[in-house]
Amino acid sequence: MTKVGLFIPCYVDQCYPQVGLAVVELLERLGVEVDFPEAQTCCGQPMANTGCDADAAPLAEKFLQIFKDYQYVVCPSGSCTAMVRHHYDHYLHDRPGFKELKRKMFELMEFIHDVLGVRSFRGRFPHKVGIHQSCHGLRELRLGSSSETVVPPFSKVSSLLATLDGIELTRLDRPDECCGFGGTFAVGEEAVSCMMGNDRIFDHEKNGTAVLTGVDMSCLMHLEGLLRRQKKPLRVMHVAEILVEAKAHPV
Image 1 (cartoon, rainbow, N blue to C red):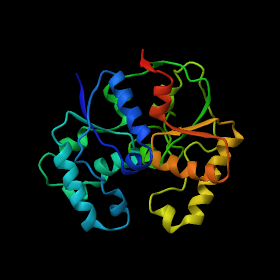
Image 2 (tube, rainbow, N blue to C red):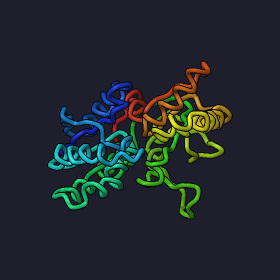
Image 3 (cartoon, helix red, strand yellow):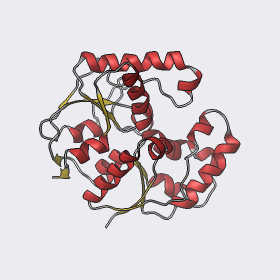
Image 4 (cartoon, one colour):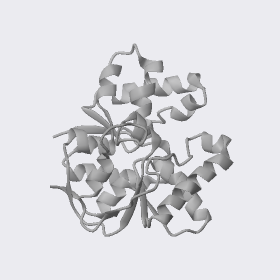
């Protein structure tokens, strides 16, 4: 049986624990043994993004020590996964076990698609779903093709969701534009961040999205906050929640 160490981002742990539970249910439904090491903390991305290397470094070291012995490490966040795979080199480049950790660190949908080899699900979700392609997942993990690259279009997330009965995926005018969250950017540049988020919401509204989803709850948290303040009816769900609600099983 495949065994994974599950890393849950801070904002999921504190604000969206139901997403973490959905991830566990989904992985176990796929035949994966899930372990959640309780000693885990923040991956250090907020500190690294603001130039606080001295604060980020011990968190990177702790992450390595906690997760280095697992067969795979899975995280329901493109940004946290990208932090480990692409930005921990600054802190851990010469540490024993780090190269192996990078090779076995996966975002949730990437793990399902690339490691487990799932290509379709049996399940039902009769809603029009708009996918927000977060920047880290798209451009650092290559979960899909981005509009600035000349490659055949693909999306690991949409290709899996599209196999559910009853689902309709929204065709957006700008399918891979940033939502404006950017972690501390949303604090330092609040007005710009909110304008960018509202642009994304307008694109979904214009094209009929009923459920807004993605692989990064941080981006979805930003968009959900804007939706709530404006009392707009779009439902926001992490992709794992959709697959659990759909009672999805691999075909």
